Image (tube, rainbow over all chains, first blue to last red; front, side, top):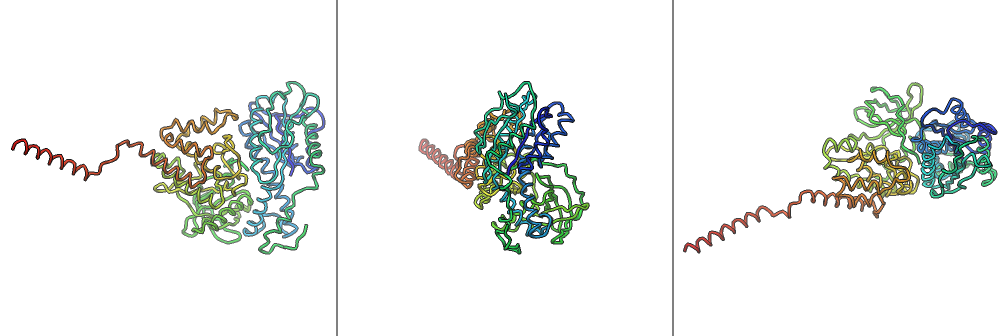
Length: 249
Length: 309
């Protein structure tokens, strides 16, 4: 399961539209979530609507929060996205296997069984989160909170039973639109400081940065659409009360 | 993984609302709101004439996951079941999932101590650790230990409520509260193990007896300086906690072998601390003092008789 988490504080102003880039990510099996960070002042109407649009195009969710809430929000979005992705896959299975549209339509005893499977998947499915950090000048007072959120997220990722990886990019870079700071890692120790990576002048190339992150997923994991979540194989297991056992994917 | 962010934006249901189970057909009458958890509201309700507690949730999977845990706990513990029913009800045209639990009367730890005196914290703390020890032996970590989730009733009896954080040992803690979280204090991982609960238990007592300084500390400390040593600092400078600082050090740094050991160590520390408060020398039994006085009297009178004769 692949996610991009964009942390920014305003609108993009150069290169390809981030909304288009997010749509492309979603097309390639990567869900895009966006956290808009503000403290004083507002993010502006343009920035706010762009943030919402990126998430919508990327199949994810967006929140505009203060630095204080950033850690919790990042956690929540990552987790909700995992749960949501699994639910989608499971609901699809339910339609095919039981002819019901969702977990809600099952009677509680059967629901208990399915939820147990979903929980298992949520805990064990491989998860990769690429964090994309806006390091333009206005982000400076927020970087400490961003670092804390990254550390906090990596702690929770590390606690999962399944393989969990995170990578960190910041944008813009000196020459290029986006720089990889920390390649895939499952350790919490590897994330360096973001300070010193700030660009005091220049642009906010959110779109190109998103494209770079998609490319990185492709470089490291090849075609990702092929390895999606497969609940059916698990739904068959523990087949006790009337689940069709002969079902093959 | 997940942080306990209470979203109380949900509208409250008015007392007298009737929930009719879609699957099992039981009818419950809501009496009043007991509390708002991370993923639902808990009401006091009646089923016929019996009181019960009902958790109404927004998300069917979250709620069912909790019910699953309660069910497996009931199965394991073979006591009177705690989980009584799982069902859906229609409310204003929406299907709302709910589950029914035994009603546990009581107040949150801090409120109880304020009302009945802090001297109760020793026995409450021991009972909490004993309860955790039972859970841990069954392979479960409670996860979300905090003031609101521990209810105390008459004579310091305790009950754990809100099992939303309960996690199978070895997995990622399902739900936690930041200031009670081991990861937040850079004191270890968020993987469920007994030490995770020991840590939160230690924070619980600091929170219960010294809330002001704890909250001040969390507000002012930079993230990179969060460290269990800071919490231990609070313990060592608090009159009621200081005598137990040995226990707190082991709890905050995960230095017990088992929760059973943590409980025994707590009991001994509390015992020693309460002994230290009344520094009278080993008491002399009354009869012994009496005999001593009598013998003194006898001795003096014998001396007098000897002198005058």
